[in-house]
Amino acid sequence: MNDDSAPTWERRLIERLLEKQLIEQRRARRWRIFLRLLTLALVVLVLTLFRTDVSVAPTTGRHTAVVHLNGIIAPGTDANADLVIESLRSAYKNKNVAGVILRIDSPGGSPVQASRINSEIQRLRAAHPAVPLHAVIDDVCASGGYYVAVAADNIYADPASVVGSIGVLMNGFGFVEALDKLGVERRLLTAGQHKGFLDPFSPQDPDDVDHARQLLETIHAQFIETVKQGRGERLKDDPRLFSGLVWTGQQGLELGLVDALGDANYVAREVFKAEKMVDYTVQRAYFEKLFRSAGNEAGAGLLNAFRSGPAWR
Image 1 (tube, rainbow, N blue to C red):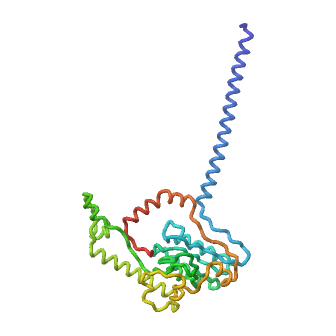
Image 2: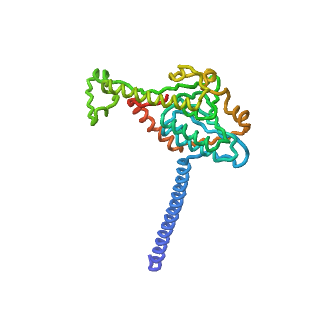
């Protein structure tokens, strides 16, 4: 190799190194762009999935607003008070709404949540006297579901709907004998004589049972008073009405629990004279539903199996 070949060899080596470096830089730049686009897409996706949506109602055109109340009335469900109230308020904001249908399919749930919805319906009706609100029962409108319905101007049902269950319950389990058979010792430490109120692993305390019955009777009396205020003289004088029994829609009509037989289409077409219906129901964010179904509700269900609490269902 002569002296002239050395610079050529070194130059070629440098060119190869520079070429590889340039390729790596381009590759790194492409990855940075890809990661940025991916991050942006994920942010948009998360914002979309976590968003709570309400159906967009037309700004013009007379129509009937529909709000669904489906399932157990409780925090974290599709029928929780916050979502139902937000849906109703959204419906009343539109000046083209001829009337509001609260479409109920619920076995009941939390007394507090149902009471909040009932109070808001009364407030909205008073604030918008020209816009009627009718409850329409699908399959079931029992306990807390009926507590909500009585706030409406009128209640419609299918002849085969289930309605009523005007009562309150507190349920749980007793595992005292099971622990004895398993040889398990229950160790419960409390500060406060009744802090272990109705503990499922301890023998029942008669004082606790009496106190629980007083709670149930008080809430039941509140329930009865609300039904009487909402239905007034439409209720028939039947001692079974407030016993916790359920009735068909046809029987409910005879007892004054229901005003007429008909579905949402009938009310929109024949009562409101606005056949076009627009859904104003606010939905929980998708991820919230996903996380709850994946684990939270399973844990909550297990916890509720061992814990007593008043409920209208």
